[in-house]
Image (cartoon, rainbow, N blue to C red; front, top):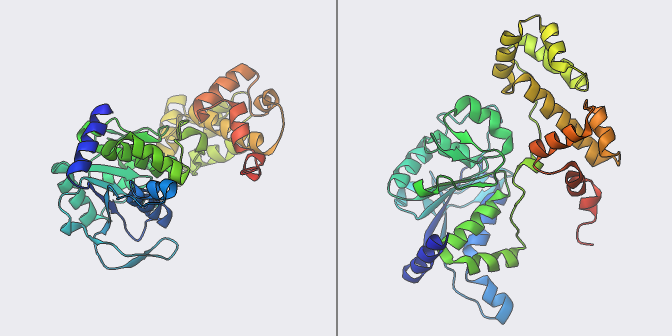
Length: 352
């Protein structure tokens, strides 16, 4: 990290690093303009707020798209790119903003110009970053093959099915394991904040990242993405037997031996059932049951003051200690911490 900060400080003395924010009509304005506001303000706004004199921006931030003509993105918000991607051959950093796709629809063939450009600039040494579903664009470009990556938790099954060579780390907020190969990815939606602060420290110095966090009241998602993730429960459209078992377990998750009951219900042998269940859902049968029980427990923790041991019994665990261990592993925090974080009172009391 010290090496990168020193390199960033030297670069700031020579010229402004060029940050390209890659966008499309499928981009959400909150990520694009949040990134733009934060990065554009580095070095400029903090002096104005503290001593009354504006400073100088340290980054050259540009909104880019395949077509430079103005267009409207999600929410009917106008975007006016600064330039076309083909007119920017060597940015220092590209951040692929989110580009929405349904959780079961890959991006195959949708961003040919963008993915071709990403491959070219990456080959020239550009640091390529993805935020939320922007990581899928990097995967579509082949830049995540064989590498670890973060993305929105809802796309875990999509990665597993359509981009199997990507090692998705769904618990991470920012994945930097491929940074030496000029790839960094960030998780769901507001993870752009964690990514931006890291890049500011990298290119401008840690003190500028600190002041940017103060100006915008930003803090790291140190707990990772797991506490925010929800179980994606799509019923299999291609396997009626497994779909029937999914519908059954949704109402009988507290059953003492749910996997065996699903096997008997399916009339398949255990090995065939396990194989077809994983193919249809992306989970092994016991993983599916565990995820479903934890999801139900989350809802009880959010909506009630029921003791945690009682919740454990209601979702199917006779041993509360076993439930607590499972919950922490699946949710990234203890059940008590989850309740404190997500009960409605924790939001209605904000700012008091």
